[in-house]
Every structure is written in structure tokens, then in C-alpha cells.
Length: 180
Image 1 (spheres, rainbow, N blue to C red):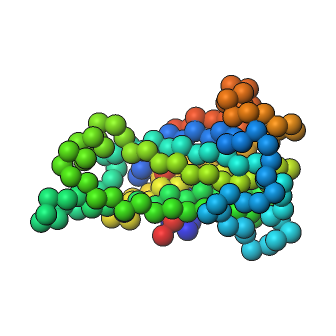
Image 2 (image 1 turned 90 degrees about the vertical axis):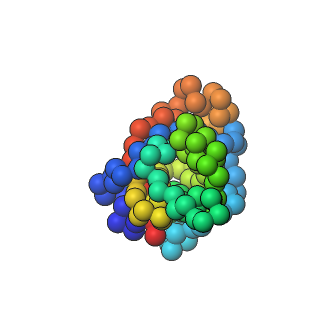
């Protein structure tokens, strides 16, 4: 997963997903969003920050679930988002892991509706940055990832206005990969 999440690396395509990235707030913030971690160089990770909402819809056919004797399907899925600067240095990261325990009806709903995920990530409000978004099915070791630029805007806008007018707002088809 480490190589799949490096800036500029080829996108793994075992898990296909759509990603929508929108500003989560109309103002900047002085601290990182909950669950976000600064990179190793504190000089590169300075506020103010703009928080972004990342919503993913992954193709459910790419995930493997283990059926246990109690009739429950188990799977573990990891979602990671990294913020890189234009020099390829890791600035901010966030990661979450979901332990799925589904009945047969739950698996059916999943295959009919897709696999939704969401995260929030803080991006410094000044500079050129890239988001590397990845999904990793830990059960099958399948991955997918996508990299998109974040074009920061000069003045605050609401998420609804930004979604219609700002270049940083994207709905991207891409494979998803998550780190181990």
C-alpha cells in the first residue's frame, strides 16, 4: 500500500471508485481536522487550513468478504488520504479502517447500492497541493487509488457555491488503494 500512496505513482486499479472532494467549511481553520496528522516537517504544515469532505463510492464487486459459520460476512477495508505539496513531500494524512460484519441481506444491499466511504482532510490554505486517496481491502489485498490536484481559492466560499464554481471540486472516477 505504501507505494500505491506515493505522489505520482501509478494508480492501482483493482478497486474502482468515484471520489467527490468539496470544501467542508466556508472559513479556514487554525488546527487540523480530527484524525489528521501532520507530516514529519513542521515547517511544511502550517495553518490556516481549509477542511475538505471526501466522499467515495466504491464498486462492491472488488471486495471480498469471509463467510463464517454463524452466517455473517466479515471484511476489513482501509481508507487513506494523503496531502502532498508540489515537491512530493507528505504534508498531512488521515486513515480509517472499517470492520464490516454483514448478514446475507446486508451483503445484498451492499451489492445493490455500492460501498460508501467518507473522510475529512485539512489542506494548508496557501500553496499547491495534491490529494492521494486510496482504498485497501485487507481481506483480499486489493487496492485502488487516485491523485487529484487541490486548487485553493483566495477567498472563502461555501461548499455549495464551491461545488458549482471552484476548480478544486471534482467528481473523479478512479481506482482506490489503501496502505497497509
